[in-house]
Length: 287
Length: 287
Image 1 (cartoon, one colour):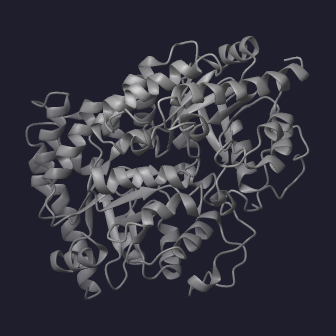
Image 2 (cartoon, rainbow over the protein chains, first blue to last red; image 1 turned 180 degrees about the horizontal axis):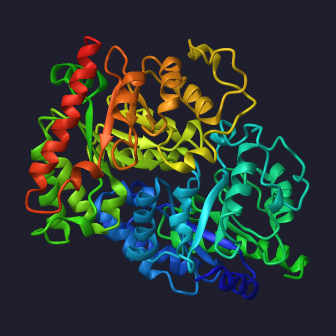
Image 3 (spheres, rainbow over the protein chains, first blue to last red; image 1 turned 90 degrees about the vertical axis):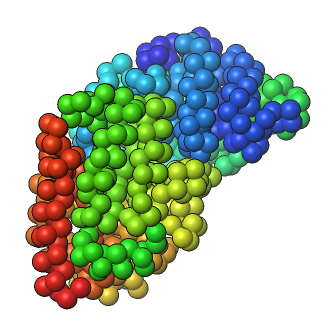
């Protein structure tokens, strides 16, 4: 699925919910074996229970890698179970020199046919380009992340300022942008909003309005709602654009809504609650 | 292997060569099948041919992931073939929020028993801590990388300056450090040189002297010699410290020294040339 189809799906379904499959083998509900098959069965049940409410699934590759080879088999089986009606994200945070990033792009766009992958920007343009070269895929670059450590480097003021031509906003003319603003404006100059998204954490609600003004067209993948404490209301108020422009991810709040036999029903209820709330925010803007 | 043993090995062997196993399935020599077994057989031959000359092996995970599950099997088999006399590096450039980085640490320190892993710093302290919590393992954080894209963000001047207490050097008092200096000084405050290294690219020879002065104790993993154009002489002149303090990596120059049946002999010769040169640099400093 490409971004144009995602926009249609969001509008048709009145949802911008992404369900995060950060499936922890040690937290499967009663009755599931703590192995590959347990993870696959759990994920299938979660997917089946949430399909109606969400438009995307995000697979956090770390939780699968930590199981070794059976984990990669579980990732393949999980991805294969997600219907083509839903946008898929490999949350892998990859990035390396050009010839190496090209291998990562091959991994997550060809070997595992995800629609998109998350990419870390520290190594600069030639570390991101190999992903962007897949024109029918989406590259999701870290902007301002949801964790406490986002203050360590992303918030540093950099002297060089932002890439002016790209930012028709309140940031324009500001020669003292912060690192994440510089990163986002520079990365935005390498591609178009039709194949580039940014990660913007839901815990950064005081920042979202400025970021949306600076990047009116781009989709933001927003983790941090739920367990990490981000507010869906705040994110939606300041982050929605005329296309929706948001994918708000919830992982633990849905996956572990119940540890009992009713885990899927409870997951469905939480997903429906997000969906219900999102419908209101979209409707209020006539999206 | 921990850093104290690595220091002993460097001194005993008079080498600080790391052989990078960035094995590209499309570039195996004649006679090797382009599949998992071909990669394993090739890697074993390269390891056997270079054991005497090097002190470390670096497995670039991207090249294995790009083969899918057979690639992870090849990575396991390759790691198992490296004797405990050599330091092992998972060149994986991972990093995510805390609970996710913990999964990556488990992957590369437990499931695959590497001695160390490379980590991307963009997401800050809680993305790096889970790796550092393995006290008998080594975390190798990106400082100044070897690629052209290192100019995009790593070289940005940041207003906040470096962590003064840690840097007994010419950088001290400089309130206009660049991002990589800020990253390195901040990361250095989270751990000790006994379990923390930095990636410093060999193509950055004009920077190495200042970086070494600023971080006299830390080991630097130095990619970029050979194919990427970095000079072993420059790196060694400015980068060695009293313990050696360098792991200089060569990948393509060794792996693809010949595409014929003599690939292993030619790989051995290139590795011996690096080793011979390194002996001179160590000897000149009485290390």
